[in-house]
Image (cartoon, rainbow, N blue to C red; front, top):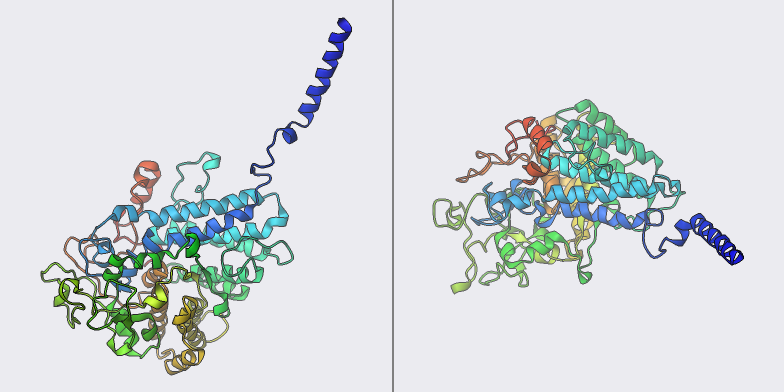
Length: 535
């Protein structure tokens, strides 16, 4: 009996020792993901798509910035577009005001997790570096919209920080520049490339370097008024590092509507109510007409005369440039002094009987070009980069070619960008270069050059639906000169919004740090306040 017990004890001791020695291997389910076996590449699309989510569709820009820059106009009040066209709260205004914030930080959190998963895996340094670039891209979007925002302590919930401090925007920019400085030289084509890149680069490291340096250039030019020395330093560094060289370098995300992933801007406009309410702005159409810009007949159409199709995108429109007419901002359809029928040059309605559409005579985005649900959303383009280099050259900075050469490159490239939205938007290279040659940069004065460059930047950004960027560059440069709307009950005192108020949830989710941030804002947490670089 004692022998039997002894043998059983020895067996148990051996068994327990064996299990303890291999405990992790035996008790780890190989079908479940963990930090040790999870492929960090799988998170990259969430970070890239999150940025696109932050700058498109109903997350704010098409409702707000598109009309603050007077790219679009809408004669509806009250309604979802009231906050954009008239600076008056309407629809779910307070909900939309925080969506860029939410999407930007959500996207950045995926990208930060890539960095956590790859910190001890040098073979994955490229996907780690690219995640840093995309993190900066997202944080730039958030800080440019709101101003001072959490960054140094943000994305740190795993470390126990759920109420991060708000960093001054100047500090945010310095952190972003430092991050780009640290990772761009480390990207190495000899190492493994990202396997899940949804930009057209498909992991190409040379392309990602160009993207990173082009992003650095864009960030540098934000600071021209508030910190020109830093702006020059990083603009020249970006150019030396290698920026975009053609439209083949453009960064965008192509969608796949058949699998439930559609372009958010196109999806918004395919709603009949939105399509009837949203028109190209008068300032934009008048500017394109003034120089016979070949883009006007591609991007714009008016409903077929006599047809009740102003709200029906499936019916034909007419793109003849001479017939295009932009809608002035600040009007409604309520029968009073600001009724759209009282607007100078009111073009009349379309349709008959109960189907009549009062605003149908105004130009709308061309159905065939913009309503493709598979169309790309642009992130950063070669033409934008060339316009920024043109401005840097005007300022006397070392960016290679002359301002006139960069401007001509940018204008020709801009005109050819629409073919990447849809083949029906393509404009021949010969037409683009001839137009650029016939409309050279005005170099008679620095101010004339800056006005021309930044007005063209505004045209491009607005008409490729990069509304946040159109708004940011307009705030920075002051061009084009826009006349604000002063509609009754507006929330800015009759000025074009210069920043977006913080999400309403911040006052309860992060009260002490939110209060501190608001105290540092000129005029408080309002739409009339200005971010640090907007002087």
